[in-house]
Image (cartoon, rainbow, N blue to C red; front, side):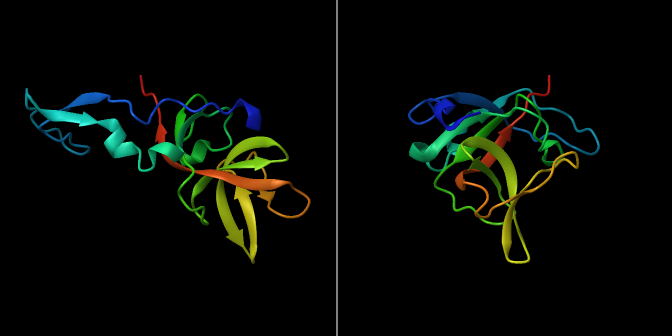
Length: 143
């Protein structure tokens, strides 16, 4: 994906309210379900902290599979969040965008994949690189 192919998606200003069930769902033992809706929730309120600096991007490939990212997933990328070691970032490396975990090892920064099939990318003078944004959420389709 090139830098020129980034297209913002209309998140800011949209109003998408989804019903929220009154009960929680058990991830352990099953519990009885309630049959009513408590309220409506606007996903923008939960997922978007900085609307004017937020974009959606689609994952291509499998270099971050062990971080829960699969090919075709949507990433919510916030350019207002400060990049820091441990965060998953969108970086422009030699004019191409990539998603990797920012790592700091022995005083040097690296873009670390979450798949052993891929090698880390050093952030040094041999790579024209800058951090474009920080991934705040992954939207993964289950069905």
